[in-house]
Image 1 (cartoon, rainbow, N blue to C red):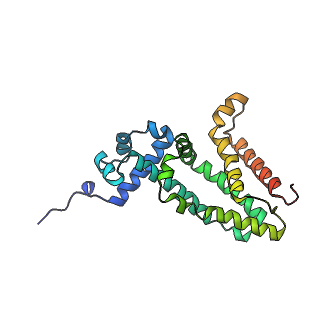
Image 2: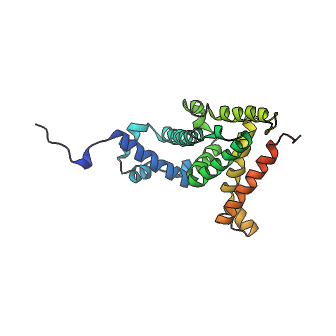
Image 3: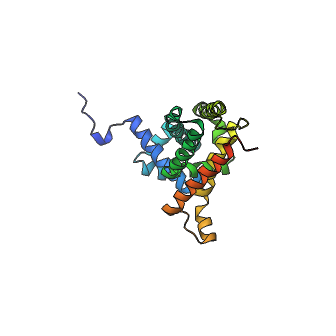
Length: 215
């Protein structure tokens, strides 16, 4: 009769994959794609490097899955927002709040995107899942714009894509550049006061832009 393996030697593929993805997300976020070494990721995940290759194939495939998971988590939380309970213009501002708070709570996300942009999105271009993950995103924005037109709270010529980009960029640029901007302007842009102020500014910019009287 075979003896049971010690708990430390039993393999749980789902748990192992999750530990690898968690470690890879952290290290890719901290050092970028080129700076993150597979052996360090494996060590951080408390896993054998060969097993990492068994699960993910190679470093590029691992980075792709890290990106896919990051987008998946963002879109799932976004889709769970109860936007239908709000007037359309207030729902748009709720998306501003959500996007900003998500960036603050998940700093690795914007660093991962910055790293992927430096590589001209080569991993996302090869992803079979990324379009499916983001499929409903613009539908949310399009539905709000259409509802806002009926409610006469949102201008009718808004482009859902541009609305999405504007909301994302107002927070993304600030957070990606807060250290250099803080140094250049001698102001701590990472302080709680300045982060709160930034959200007020973002809401005001979007609120003024989506108003029906904007030409």
